[in-house]
Length: 418
Image (cartoon, rainbow, N blue to C red; front, top):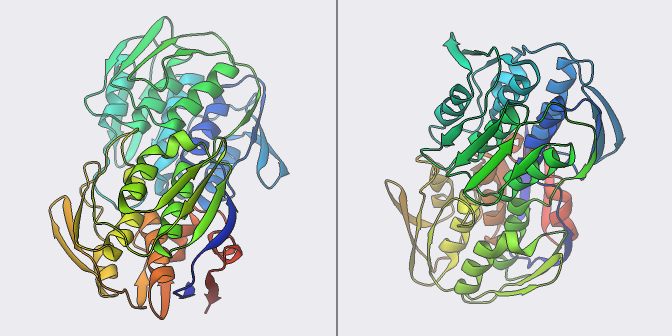
């Protein structure tokens, strides 16, 4: 078993560089299946989820070449396989992007129903609705999804709920469909824009990404290209929160400050100082933090993936604040872990009420999912005494070298392997 041992109470100070965006990379990697040439992706984060997805593509027959730790080429020109039923595909939530990519390539696909973090019901009904509008027949039997179509035909698709995954998946399927596809109420997240930009560089015709209406004119072929993954908004936000929680002073480099505006606004409201540069952001924590209210929303609102790290800050404020989770209904499982540290938190449905002003004390904590794991680490950095965090497999799914980066900022953290 692996665990982090953290001695709290040290302010984080220095500079840290952010890796490529996990959620963007997980959309870009399967998009290479659509190319009739070689695609080179730079700034790919070296994390478990991404490496697992690359391995899935290899099993499909995609040839990959590792140029360096964060640069890989993908050659899908000769793949013939549209079925992937192994355990890796079953366990990985983002494997649903194989649906759109393989439909776009072969007009048929067979994969297991996707898994992922247990943070609530995450149906793929909006994905299926979009595919069916394009002319796809869908069969789900014994946990396996079977999809096929004679041909893909552009359609008008209205998303009943804003879904990043469904928006990207429909784009992947529609880029080679006949005619125009219009996605209304589309997700506007930066990684949706990143996937659209990548497809356009390959020769697709996508307009409106970043707005709630995306128009896709189908093309007959996509070529190879070189592309750099955008910086990870969630990793950047995690270090921003950690800097404030430890009353530190951290320059966070390789970011797009506009992507962080909702986070910067809430940290400023709490009393932290935020200084923006062209591709960096400096976060300075203060002694006393104001209690605030946070509601998670689709981009450009406050991201649900930073709800758990923000909860740690809410425990450290003076007064009472709330977090309302509007995206996932089961994302407060980590609250019991913070209570072990002395946090005073009441959960009522989708609302968590924080009575702050108490010093957190070190405890043995469990990472219940990816972002909750990051929150436990931040709690340990801010707490009095020694904190141990277990279930590191969750954290390593989405953070590149978290331990090393925190140590470079002065954190007293080490990984212990039993």
